[in-house]
Length: 79
Image (tube, rainbow, N blue to C red; front, top):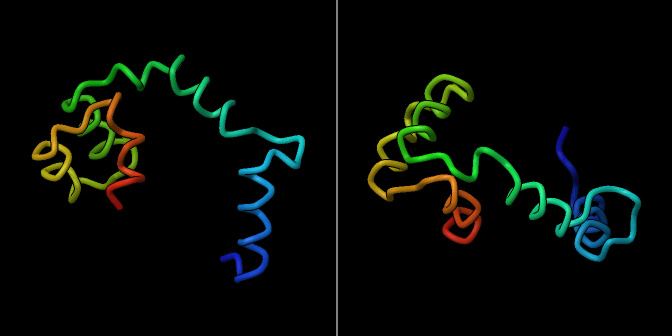
């Protein structure tokens, strides 16, 4: 299922303005900072890519960009 124009826009507005009773951006960051994944090395992330999410085609990119657990959220700004 894909969200259409206005549905998606509405969900994004609600999400970023904390107009619901669900998880907030701050909640996500707090969870991220407390997570084990934040301390993953590039090798750990490559292992996860290959074995857990089955996206081995991205392994060389993660290695080349030296993406580790701390830098993983920054991919949002690169894409």
